[in-house]
Length: 91
Ligand code: SF4
Picture (tube, protein in one colour):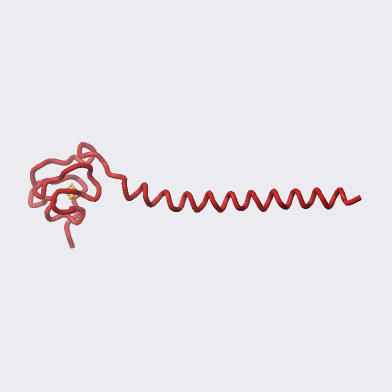
């Protein structure tokens, strides 16, 4: 006559396990997303990068420039005197 009690225990254990799995999943997602975002850069073509300044704007004066020749958002080497549409003036 303790059949009901066993069923209840089995169900509650399953609920507890699925809760743990969901928690693990949430941790995996929350650690994976920032890393992916940090590594994500767009191509020079998508940024309409060019190796020459545009107007008075150039990478050397951009907040995204990472000397000597890299950019936070654009792949590959960028020139200090290059430019792209993501240009953001240094504050
Ligand atoms: S102008 Fe474009 S390529 Fe140059 S540093 Fe800024 S965001 Fe990067």
